[in-house]
Amino acid sequence: MLAGEMDAVRRIVFLVLAGVLSAACGYADIVIGSKRADVIAELGKPSSSARRGNHEILQYPKGVRIELELDLVADIKGYVPPGASSAATPAPAETPAPAAAATEKSPAKAGKDDDDFNPAVAANALGDEVAKMETAWGGAPPPPPHHGPSSWLELSILLVLRFIYTIPALRLGFKYWEMDAFWSGTFAIAAIDALVHGIMIALGPVTGGFTTLGGVENAVPWLVMIFTIRHFCFNKRIQNAVLTAGAVKTVAMLCDIFVSMMLMNAFFG
Image 1 (cartoon, rainbow, N blue to C red):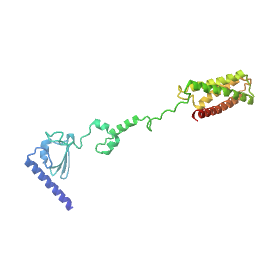
Image 2: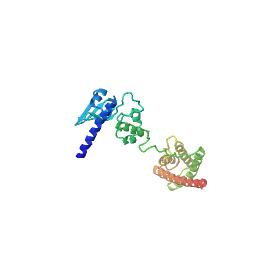
Image 3: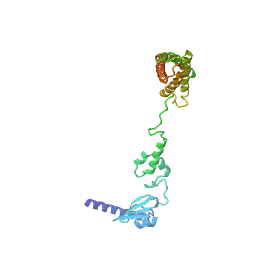
Image 4: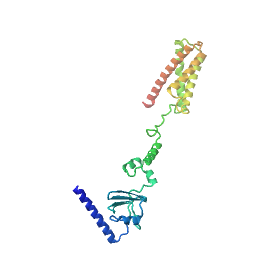
């Protein structure tokens, strides 16, 4: 208790001496130790004030704040003496930052300074960063490459190979499922199947790779083969045509895998 009273006495003595020194030097500006009357004469009536005991705070426009102890100036904020150069005057402590500088400040940087933190500015900056993102997890992944031939020559080779091993698969299927057709009909079925596969592969880049998906690329030719088998074969039963087409497509798929592995070993070792 005694120490607190001593500090108060020292502060009052300091303010009195500062006021006496200011008056002796003839300063017209408001400084530490100036009287309340001098502040009112210099700045006029404050826009707002608050008093608690011997302590009083005077608020003026443009962030000027004067603190008084026993009607003597104890602290000054935001006050620029008349005629003082802007270069020698420190920036006001509570002057709001310009709007342009506030918008350029990132949310992380704004959070470091509680005095300058503006929730609206931080939200706008965060919204700008999110708007630059293509997805919620960052940049969008590159689209998968479309499965398709690299040239028309490669497509032609694949279709010729499919036509060749579809013919023996058809003859075996006919024998097992009691279906039969002329050789011309067998060639026609194999040719139509190869043509449908070629159309599906050629449409891959146009459909975004949809027609080259495994299920689509094999399902559509399989349905077409069912109708071509019924058309060219003597036995018109739909059940036998479905089973024969399924067996032929399974054999053709296995042959595709075998041929692909052989070509990869030949070209890449």
